[in-house]
Length: 259
Image 1: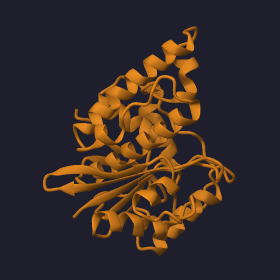
Image 2 (image 1 turned 135 degrees about the vertical axis):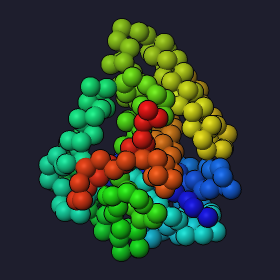
Image 3 (image 1 turned 45 degrees about the horizontal axis):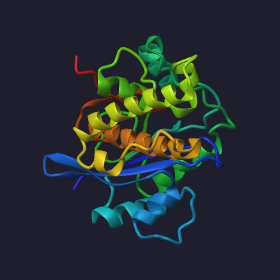
Image 4 (image 1 turned 120 degrees about the vertical axis):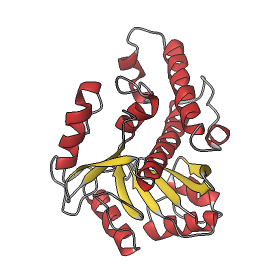
């Protein structure tokens, strides 16, 4: 059985990281579990006493407990490389060249952000038998993904989708908060429908939050959604429908355009 663990990894230790697990079900794929943090995902796997922190071995064990098989691929939204990251990489520049005009350039990583967090993730997954993969084809291991260009391809959109809770005032300046929330939820509904058409169970696992939900609750929902997007990109990489953008040191995998 093929399976993908998607991680929307935070760049700091003070922010949560969404986690999603998908597995092949015959010729289709199904969402088995999703959580808005490491702790939430551990609890989905029955590890109620697990600390809410990154632990590659525990994540892989929790995911394997849910699938009944070892995980095939880990797809993480965080800068990853075979060498220390202290500036923009070939992968950052490659994605920005292709998607910059569509407002989906990458953030610039540094020695402090994500810094040691990214280095540890690369090293710990490699130690667990999941080395970083930067070239196609890929059939196991760890890959870096980036939801913004992935969603552009998923939606066949002309530019980056306006789906981040922290940027609604930038997306829709001048609108009252209630109207911005309504626009955001409409965008989330579209993304969930697109993912649900490719991964069974997404809509059931991610019912839209209330427009009156707190900012913290909305951000948690967004983190879970991003984790599912990461897992979907991993699916496309396993099936030969994603491209690694970068070089042999680092690559960001993006679903291939239908065209």
